[in-house]
Length: 108
Image 1 (cartoon, rainbow, N blue to C red):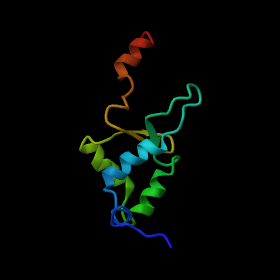
Image 2 (cartoon, rainbow, N blue to C red):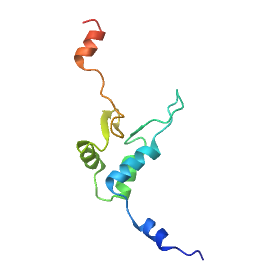
Image 3 (tube, rainbow, N blue to C red):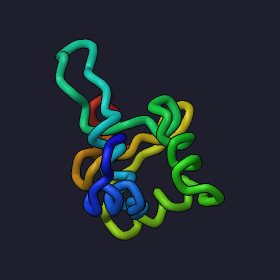
Image 4 (cartoon, rainbow, N blue to C red):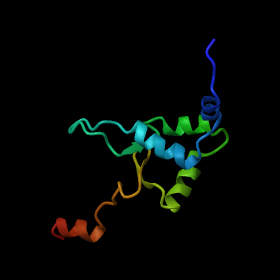
């Protein structure tokens, strides 16, 4: 029979905070880009399995509301996309062109 040390017991009993969980998920679930082969710095909240994993780890807690709080606190960045949202560490997601920049590119 394997003996469990006090340190191992503490590690298995301690639960991550929401922020720790989200940042760990971003690092662990980021997929490789098919074109470049580089690991992306963001995850899709639905397609990566993040939302389901969050609900299992934090029963009764809404991942969408918790992600919103972290975005408001500047802990992560966020943007909507098809089928859900993309989240990443601060500064990773940049917003697209403004409408005036887009019109300028179009020559209008």
